[in-house]
Image (tube, rainbow, N blue to C red; front, side, top):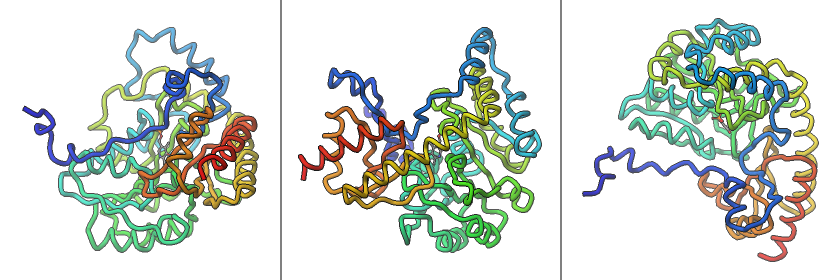
Length: 368
Ligand SMILES: *Cc1c(COP(=O)(O)O)cnc(C)c1O
């Protein structure tokens, strides 16, 4: 018998998430060291030393189960964001929270809206529970078309709308005014998951406070992560803020110990280390300029990005990707985001960015 047939059709239809290639894998394949990975929007500075110290301390009690309620981390978040404990839910990465929202609120046949070229997990989380996703075409510059998403959400009577701001892999940004118009037009029984994984990278002039919106919009779920600006991607820790009835439902479907004790301790320390996040932000600004200048010199079109990565248009993307791997540089083709002529590069250290640009120039010369 074929055991795949035992799974529901909507599970069999899932195309698995394609992660960036790990450095260790390319090392095994090529037998070379010194590989630069700019493929998963990781923090090139690593983690804050305060977070690392907290992890070492937490290891001492690793034989014990974690606090399943995550009190200390929630408490730190409550103070930072001026919400209550009941408004916060922790996740094994914010990916976990996207799935918990889907699992708590969607039944097979329910409907969901997200944007074309938006983070792949929205479609995956939707499909995994047998719900139907509507991908709304991006109109201008690959960003979310919120007016059409609003119309679609109402017309199809969807349960959840996923919005990424800034979006990955396009780096596009929605202004708070655009978001507010959208939220105010939406019936309160439609939930909005506002994924702000790159919030800390927003330039000052684009800063906005979505957390205060929770008072006006009880249907809003804000997700954040410690994986990007906080440099803790390997630990897997994120959080969501929402109305307590929403976190209540999400809590019912989460694993009792979904965030490990080391991650909880590290996240508390990382949250306090404001200067590390500032350093990360500044490095990213400089690196973004370095990479976009380099792309311009190579006459490559790119999408202005508000995150720690940038998407650029290039012919023969698959060939270029392969050639870059041989040159020891891992970036990300995004054909699976319906952008076959584009690639995404994460912003690294100055030397990594330079190595990428050098290798890219070389690859273009060879392939085209
Ligand atoms: C990286 C990313 C996440 C989640 O990352 P976690 O490591 O699971 O917290 C969520 N949304 C977007 C848009 C991302 O790019």
